[in-house]
Length: 104
Image 1 (cartoon, helix red, strand yellow):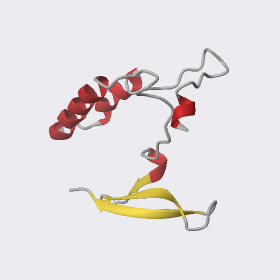
Image 2 (cartoon, one colour; image 1 turned 45 degrees about the vertical axis):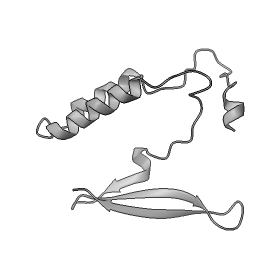
Image 3 (spheres, helix red, strand yellow; image 1 turned 90 degrees about the vertical axis):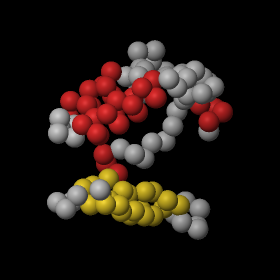
Image 4 (cartoon, one colour; image 1 turned 180 degrees about the horizontal axis):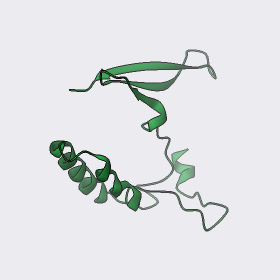
């Protein structure tokens, strides 16, 4: 899949795949409360590191990304549950595997 993805071109030239340098990713800090300065600083450092990554056909391409807001939930106590899609022993059979963690 990864080898084929290096030559992927959308059928419509106006379609652009988002990347980590997309300005929308730089707007996230506005949603982190000012009282959470340590988290805001970690976010800025992460964005700086990501912006240094190569974006060329050999180092960047199509990916499957599970770390999105549809795959994790936070309850009223701050417990976060991630849902991870995993294969079962039988090919083609899928199951959801919950994995939980507590926020510090």
